[in-house]
Image 1 (spheres, rainbow, N blue to C red):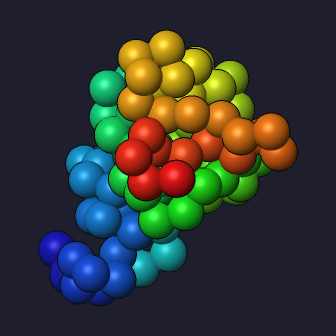
Image 2: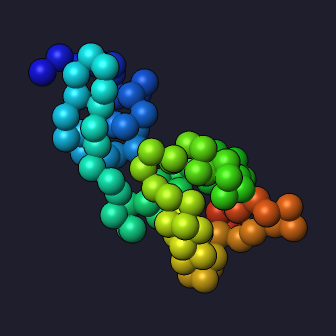
Image 3: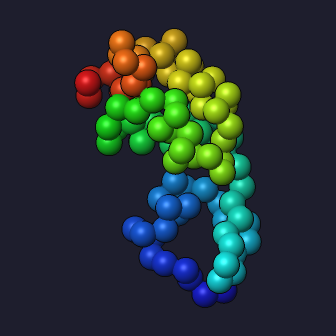
Length: 95
């Protein structure tokens, strides 16, 4: 199967998700598990603090807003993330 792009420019490969099918018009990936979603969100928050809506705009085809909220709640409860007064989440130690 022909590659659509290199690893650096392919967002699905950057997120570490398994590509189930791809052709010149579509790429189908397996939805992330809860643990994978937490890792993806953690990696995204390392770049910059984001709101749930901002995260959902990036992950809209992969995870519902509810799943993103649950993952963020778990990160906050585990002490790995904090939420600011403006609703932006960031990784503890990077804020």
